[in-house]
Length: 220
Image 1 (tube, rainbow, N blue to C red):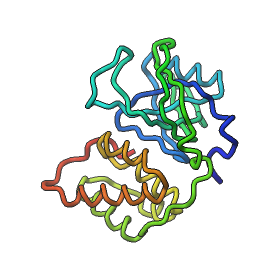
Image 2 (cartoon, one colour; image 1 turned 180 degrees about the vertical axis):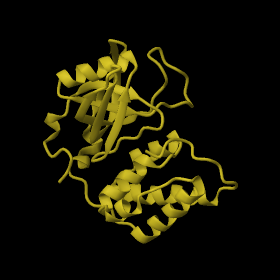
Image 3 (cartoon, rainbow, N blue to C red; image 1 turned 90 degrees about the vertical axis):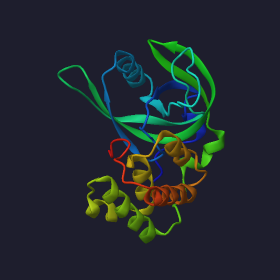
Image 4 (cartoon, rainbow, N blue to C red; image 1 turned 90 degrees about the horizontal axis):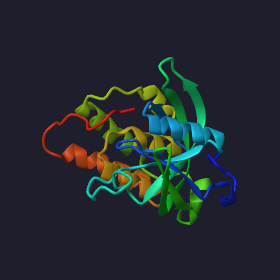
């Protein structure tokens, strides 16, 4: 079942964005977040009161900082809060379900310290009912095992091998510790099959790079 089968009219035209390096949200994926900064506590509270939606975007460190904070890439993914709890020290522990990608049409005035955008979902209408990806599953898993071994990443292979093709590509694209431009390339891949091909290419490129550098970010 697609993660968000209702029509585009159900998607808000304006919403908050959370710029967070290394945190990739894709349609159908679930992203756990530990919210503790006051501005993002405010963002979460406002989202809970108005449709439970906000978006994840990648900061773009190759561009100058803006008056509202770090430059951000032009494409992000809208999510809906599907679980929520509050810790004793006031943090919010949430899970965000990816709904649809969007292109930023304009950045809006900040509200309570967090950033907001006006979005264009038209280029990503297929996200509401994505086709299953077509790719060499055995080849991808083989490259993934070597990638995890090189970077010292532990994985539950029983869980990984039981995932269907769409869940496998989405989950791996989200959790592998790629750099921000690589994660953005995975986000902007036109189709799930294109994303699977891009994922395989990134794994292969890493395996052929010299040295055995440590991972560039958390694996989950």
